[in-house]
Image 1: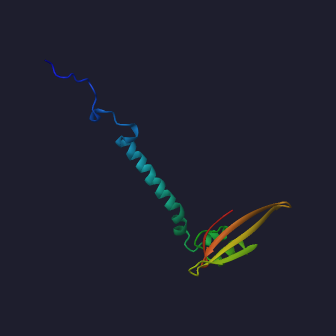
Image 2: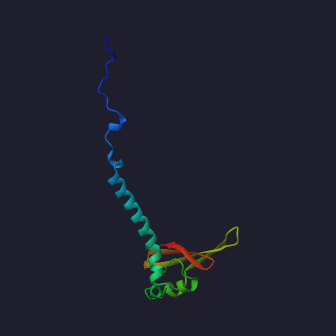
Length: 124
């Protein structure tokens, strides 16, 4: 009597590797992600290394995170409105609002945010 017939079933060991799991593809993806992370870090750090005292930024009338209130005033002048608040821990936060009149009916706003006298961010 013959034993049970086994069909030709491929085992998981012989299964083809999905494209995304292949080593060259994974290495390429990891290198791309690492390069992207390094680029984003360098984008924020390199300008400070090249101009640590913000002199060139002040000449160009640009502001950058890390500037003091005085440096921002020198670059952009005084704000239209200044909102001051304090956190639970007593940290002073300021929001400076600048208004740029493009024409008689259009205003463009710029916002800067300070903590303890240092520029921490903004948008326009």
